[in-house]
Image (cartoon, rainbow, N blue to C red):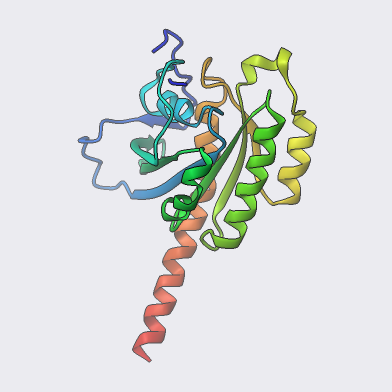
Length: 214
């Protein structure tokens, strides 16, 4: 399942990619955020990442083994530079025990299912429970129904997914890595709420430092 097609990635007004060696303006602020993608094998996690980072879709890409790492640097309209450190985890059962190594310390978790596969939606719910038990305090969780271009074969309704997301304080969005639909919007949502997460972590760290000094 993999992820190069001629379909361009969509750009949204507030986010622009910049090269990793670009220098930011002196009045800019730099943020670094770790994201992890979780979900069953074959739901398109790698395709989502490659569409966002490289603007590509390759339906023949190989299944992820263990985890893969990619990064994307974004420039916001307020001169903020954001570096997403994206961990794409393997969906096979034999790698499930390794997942906590990758989502530990993550600011956001993107939990992906395939809208044509009820089994993958059930697996997504398993990952949500794991994150609730073992994820970072205040971690941003986004439920993603991928392969929205296959809507004629839909087996998981948007309403069911939305209701589940609401009950679990998650954000919900449907995407298509193939057509690039909602891919940038997904990461916009992540950034908006990661900013709050990073701020809270910073405040918590300062509080702990103050306690250590007393």
